[in-house]
Image (tube, rainbow, N blue to C red; front, top):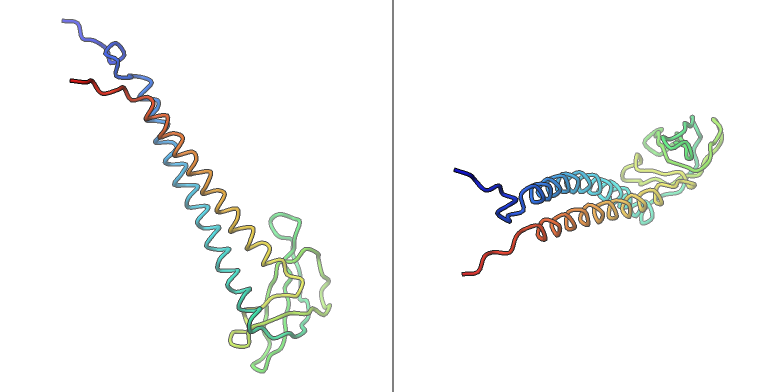
Length: 164
């Protein structure tokens, strides 16, 4: 007895299998991009809420640079500083665009309810947080496009149902 192959039966065979594999790969990519984009949005939103908190109830003061180090992108720096409040000395860090020398004074803003929430005046934290939110949204959009496109390809690969 001779069996017809799936290709000869018009069910799509290999093309349909490839489309299913493409959907699985696209789903995994969507999951990865969704998690990555979601993390960027979340971390950016947390930082933006701290920035707003400092805008609303922050107290301006001066401190001293303790040291600085390049960030991972080598275009910005982490500025470490210390300052005094009524409760003692507080240490903080801000991402800035230019290197500062140790021992130099630095203007900063801190939350009197929680002095560890602070930023140097020249901080680029708000810009970085906003960029994270935008980038995360774009990454999720790309992942969605990939998934929707692959589902459309799978739908085109399916044979028309036989009419009775």
